[in-house]
Image (cartoon, rainbow, N blue to C red; front, side):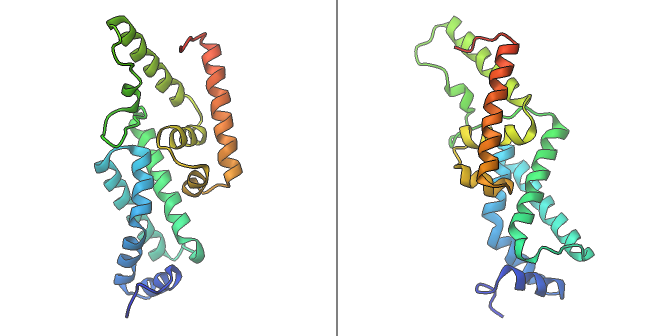
Length: 193
């Protein structure tokens, strides 16, 4: 049986009937999208791989228990599980978000201007640290949209698909995130210039 031209729904049905190869095909088919969404959140390849495996273990458990009912919404369902597991990882580790570029370096570290003197470098480093702390204070949904938009460079359409919300909801969360950041800056009487 060729599985390349078969729908996710049909693969799910065959898997539930005992054909393990169908689950493997589903995982291969959607691995890049699911893994990338996890990686964008955790920013660590090894942790992302662990969460990816845990995501599909949970998928298998739910499917084997007979509780899976969203046959036409398989990918959004898996993405939601993956996203929630990545967010849970952050909650458990209470880790600060570190946004890295393609070269693996912290983007905040790049904010340093060339030829800064020692005092300017210290001030810049403190500002970057303060911004990270303020971002951590945002509600989870707002923080997610802000990080994915500003630091991962995703479009609002991509963010909406990844977080399983409408584009308007993603835009609204970004607006609230920026408003809340401004309020936090004013409350703490910070000068981030």
